[in-house]
Length: 65
Image (cartoon, rainbow, N blue to C red):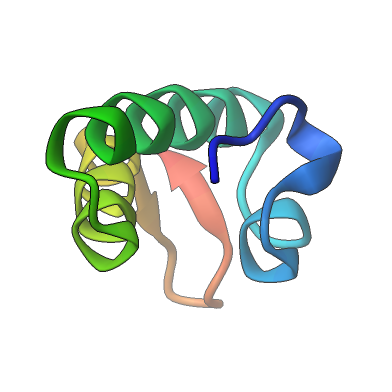
C-alpha cells in the first residue's frame, strides 16, 4: 500500500519525524514496497533511509545529523 501523501503515514512517523524525514520515509517506503512486495521490508528500508539523515536526540526527538 503505497503512501500518496504525508498525511497517510503512520502516526509514529507523522507525529515524531520532521517533515523532510517524513518525505524521505514516504519515498523510500513506496520504492521498497514496489521492489520487495513486503510491507515489513519496506518499513525497514524506510526507517533506514530516515536514519541516514536524522537521529534521535537525548530527549527522544528526531533531529538532523
